[in-house]
Amino acid sequence: MSELTLESVTKQFRGVEVLSDIRMDVKDGEFICLLGPSGSGKSTILRIVGGFEHADSGSVRLDGQDIQELPPNKRNFGFVFQDYALFPHMTVEGNIAFGLKTRKLPSDVVKDRIASALKLVGLTGLEKRYPAQLSGGQRQRVAIARVVALQPSLLLFDEPLSNLDAKLRRQIRIEMKTLQQELGITTIMVTHDQEEAVTLGDRIAVLQNGVIQQYGAPMELYNAPANAFVAGFLGDPPINFLNASVVMEDGRPGMRLGEEFRRLTSEGLPTSTLPKEAVVGIRPEDIRLSDTEGVPGVVKIVERLGAYVLTYVAVAFSETPLCCLAPNEVAPQAGQRVRLRFDPDKTLVFDARTTKLLPGVRLEAPTPIHS
Ligand SMILES: Nc1ncnc2c1ncn2[C@@H]1O[C@H](COP(=O)(O)OP(=O)(O)OP(=O)(O)O)[C@@H](O)[C@H]1O
Image 1 (cartoon, rainbow, N blue to C red):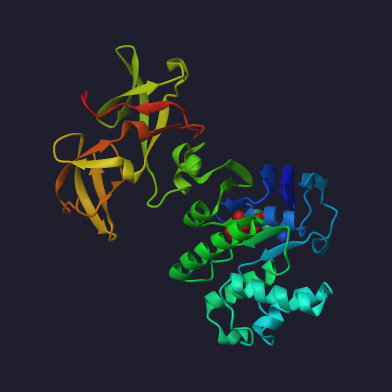
Image 2: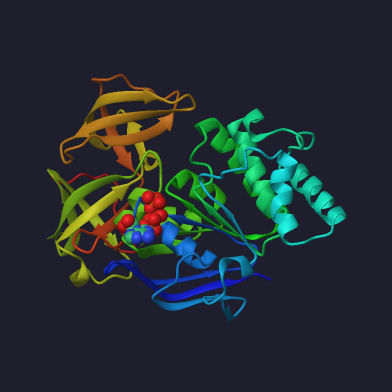
């Protein structure tokens, strides 16, 4: 069992608050990703969990026990950093054995642990190689094997893949997920790469300025982001944002998007509580290109990505062209006039002032268009 709970954790550096009121629970066997831009406090949380920093207030509990006074070497946690620093003068075997020997384990146990760790990361047969004789991906696998061999109760990864090229990142990412599922070790990983977080994390904590903006399953965050920041951080290509004013027409709320007027449905939210200014979020895959129906626009740029095509369409109510993602066979030309249809169930509406999601508020279907 390895369940971790962070409660009301705060941290300041030189009088500047870098973590405020961090609350997180990590269940046994879960893979948690801490996602956020540079400086948002991800590594500081990991370092507090690892025991390399002390929280100013709040508690960090493992299986109910407060561990804050335990030094890092008494926590039995495995740490893999971005700069995984293998010992260059030691073989693969020697690198993995090092930590095991400091724990004074019998030599047959050390041998077994090395063999099974190397098997897990697919490096059996490379025991006698030196780090310089390995590829970047192999070195990272040794770094993971070295930590896994210690049989830690918690795995802590700080941007472990960021030194690798895109293809290798993807490959090792799949290996890490498989390995973590096989071993069932509770894992926390820091990343600023949303794709990595979405593919690896059972749950993701999105951080901004030391505050957890939302903590939940990847698709929960994607489909129902708590605020515009989370909506913008998850998804590639990113969500389109449009500024809009909320207005009443015939006693019913609607929105002005430049010259366009759209009715609003506001399930569960009284019309009187709707903000005056809103931000509408529409994901590229929720916009359909049409010849006949919807908002008129002009294609500016077409980017072919192989399986998909991204079309950037200039419309009257947005300063920046809207990005639409469509299957490859739907490929308009730059300069072409098109119409755009939004999936009304998928539009997200945020309060422009607080940036919070207005749950249940949707733009209605594009037809009929009022002017
Ligand atoms: N030891 C320290 N002394 C002073 N300030 C620090 C220290 N460690 C971190 N900080 C500051 O705390 C804030 C959060 O840093 P942290 O490293 O946790 O962010 P991060 O989200 O992991 O960023 P990155 O992705 O760049 O590593 C930053 O503003 C950073 O400059």
